[in-house]
Image (cartoon, rainbow, N blue to C red):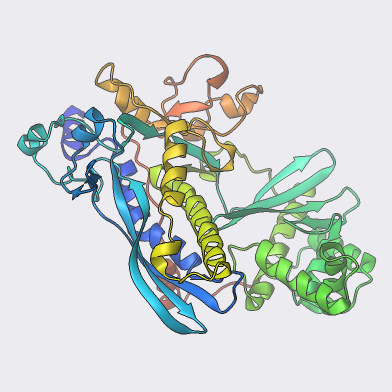
Length: 488
């Protein structure tokens, strides 16, 4: 069978960089609203004042001329020739309340967001070949890049370990089950370790060192020995380890378990404060992807029991180690996800600046309104700086790079590069090797020589990356089909 007509029809109907455009569109249409929802209410130090945020919107790119007059129909070619940034204005509905009485409401301009070419906020979207030529664009250009100060910048896809996925591994004489739990901007590594003598320990952000797992389970609500045993599978090896850990555990009440954590997070404080701080730490930093409310503690306890089961099974040889280089354990962060990380960081700084401006205005006894406290540069400057230099959130470097235009294939490879965050100066033989799961996903030949070999890769020409999908519709469908949760 001759497959070339099929491949030709694929490229006639598909944009080679469509996944980047879809990712950016999802960021603008869905993720921006989620970020605003995370920071919906702003309460500065002046407690009687608060600001409520809602309905963020990105408009198509505009240009402000030297005389201050705005002009729409700002096309990418003009941004290139005039060394301007191709960006759209951001607007946000802000309500100023004083003692819960609304004082001011405004659709405020809060900054500029660089717009990806050919995305749904770009003037080029939906234009035919003739219209693209008239606007100064190449009809065969893929889009999916940005124009910052006249320079074309592509964001390099980042290869990261999958969040919210339990991986088990062996380190010397320890067996470890760990998960990177992610909620918004927060990423917390939760690790359960089974030592050579069978004792189970747990660590998570802000946790005490050498915290025994069963102390944490009791703090989460599994107080009785019967409840703890019931959270684990009824297998001989696992039961053996559970009974050993129960025998070593001398804590019998939930408050005693909470106090053990509280003595570490709030040393020297009264017991009521210690207990409150322990609950806050557990809710906020322990497995936040499950939930951050008091009602979610029991679900966290069962999740930890599942992790502990995997580490015990690994120690007895019932389960094999997880391969971190297997592509099921990896995720690719496309342009939309990278912009989400950057915008979330910039928006946090904008809120911090907003609180400072409110406090300063009230302290100086000036009239408080939205126009005087909003400083649009707080967001724009940080986004533009990161995209100009390539220095991203989490100390990542080289995330954005100049688009090469030496030939037709040069921008194509730039838009489909995949970069690993691992240190290029270390040997990391396994991470650099071609893995069997790269087949059909990554090109085994297209990788640079030298220190970056095997760490910078390229997507195969027919490979596609899907964007984030919400879990709720799937959960609802399973619920309607009568699927029941099996007790761990």
